Image (cartoon, rainbow, N blue to C red; front, top):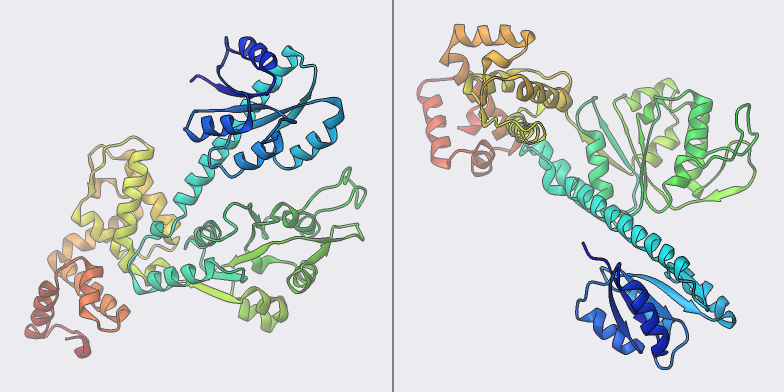
Length: 455
């Protein structure tokens, strides 16, 4: 793709000389004053680099820089200055200019600087695209599940994301705690800031303290240079403390101080550091039990749990299983370039009946494995692993009775989650309201065990 440069200089000879020198490699526009240059940019001319004289009558190079800085797709600005204006050029770099050149201009140096500026612009644009892609993948709409528990979590996330409150996420391994942390961050005002993660269970106590708070050169054997910790790396963004229940007591004290005062010292240092960081933490441990044992500080616990999100295991929100399974089927079919169009009824019955001790993570791995290994365009009983075979045998032995019992229990669970609201339950079950009433009437007529309050 052709790269383009806009030259702005009130000296026509300089303007023409630079235009001739650069025209072989770039599409070159030129302007003799600031307003003419802005007219070119505002006409949506594709400009990658603006090469502007700093001192001009009317709009100066600084004025042009100021106007360009508000553009969404802004070009890189290189300023041309005389010896007497170097201080102003340096100030311009602090305001967003990429670099400056001192007259007289050396064309070889100019060409090299332009190439670096264009590459810098390309990298920034790629970073923006990647950030936008990440934000899109962690948007609210990517929360899969229609159960009451999932909708409650969705509601809390929407309300808490726009705040700076500390959030504690509780739940078994594999329930999606890290996903929730990502969604909170990427839907907050800090979404353009860093999202830094640390697994508190992955490091020994001394190493963990250094990882979180950093260390000074010479703080301990092997500390050959200063190291910034995760707190400093997360400045302006969010720090996610995964498995926070594994924090040693010594590190808990230091974390509590940060939450109270927003300050800390690096390991081996005495200079107080201050950063702007939001804390989101998660654990699969029983923190309240740890409080009684004395292995987790009560004051830290209440600082971390300003907002608490409890994520139920998948076995307690079976209404989400089919929706999750179909989402993973589509996702991994695209990733692995497979044309898998569905899941057979008997296979879906097994999937919905299984307890999934590994929660969403286990279900996700299971579906990906089936997508990769199936010889069909639909996941069937032939694709299920050995540990699910006994469930299939039960299904075959009991036939439609098992299917009806599973359906009955699903309706009971859904009505329970909706507080008996049949309209809402029908939506979640994916059936018409009349169909739901017909099934309830059948249970009543057949004297099938069913909570009377829902009939």
